[in-house]
Length: 389
Image 1 (cartoon, rainbow, N blue to C red):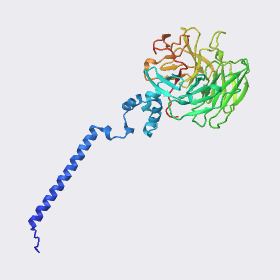
Image 2 (image 1 turned 90 degrees about the vertical axis):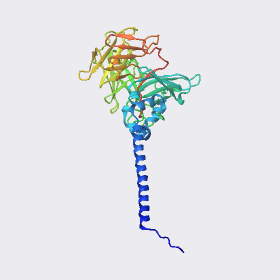
Image 3 (image 1 turned 90 degrees about the horizontal axis):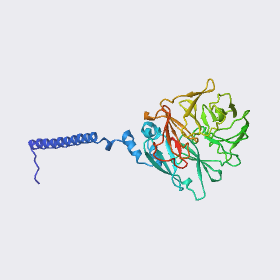
Image 4 (image 1 turned 45 degrees about the vertical axis):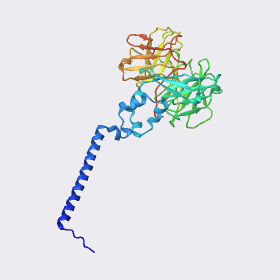
C-alpha cells in the first residue's frame, strides 16, 4: 500500500482555493441581496402587504366593485376597516337608490360623480301582483313595506345585514316611521305614528330589535291641541323623536320616560292657513333641527327655518353656508361636501308632475333642472352609504 503524501505547500494552496470560492459565493449572495433590495424599491407593490395599498389605487379598485363587494372589501383587514379616509368617496356623497327590475335588482346612482352600481336583493324579488315601497332611509339603512304589511330593514352597502320587523297589522293609518340608531345596535328603537283622531290624539308604535318582540308596542296620547303630522319622517335628535306638524308645531316623544308633548308655542312659519306641510321636511343639520318648506308652486322659493332651542322658536335662514341638503320625506340629509360648488344648495326630488329632479341655489333662488339629465326613477330615495353596520 502506497502512502498518500501531501506537502504543506499543497495544503496551503487548497486552503487559499477554498477561501476564494467561499468569498466568491458570499460576494454573489451579497450582490443578489442588493439586487433584491433595489428590485423592492423599484417595485414596492410586489412585496408590500395589501393593507398598505395607496388611497388612489384603493379608490380605483372600489370603482370596479359591486355594492356587495365593497362591503366585503371593507372587512378584509383592520387597516381598511379603521381608516375611513380610504372610503371617503363612498361615504361622503349621498347616493340615489331605486328599483330597476321586479327581480330585486336595484341601481345606486351617484349623480354628483356620474357613477352607478348595481345591487341584487333576493328578498325583494317580486311576483307580478306583489309590490314593495321604501318608507324610510337613515344611517345607510332603508325600511321597506312589502305585501301583507310586512316590514324589512336592509343595509344595501353591507352584506348579510337584514332585520325583519313585525308587520303593521291593526295599527290604523300609517303616517311616518324612523329609528334611533342602526338596527344592529343594541339600543335601537323603531318609532312610528299610525293613527291620529282629527289631530286631537295620536297613536305611537314602538319596537326594539334587541327584544325581538313579534308585535309592536302601542301607546296612545292626547295632544291637548290640534296636531297633524306632515308627510315627513320624524328625526331622532338629542335622545328624543321630533315630529313636524302643520304650522310648524313639533311633537316630541321621549323614549326613556315614554312621554309625548306638543310644542305648540312655536311661532308658525307658514304665514297663512293654507299650509298643509305637503312639501315640508324636518332634518338635523350641524347639530340643529331645521325645517325646509316650499309652496305648491313649481317655481316657488324654498324657505329654511332653524329651531332656536333656547327660545324654542323658529328663525328663518337666508343661506346654509357650506352645507348641501338632500331632500326626501323618507329621510333628508345635510352634508358638507368636498366639492364646494354644491355649497348653499338643495337637491330636490320631484316637486311637480313632470318628476324632474332639480338643484336649488339658496343665493340665486333658481332651479337647475338639467343637473341629472333624467327624470326621477321610480321609488327613488337618498341614501348615505354605511359600510360598517
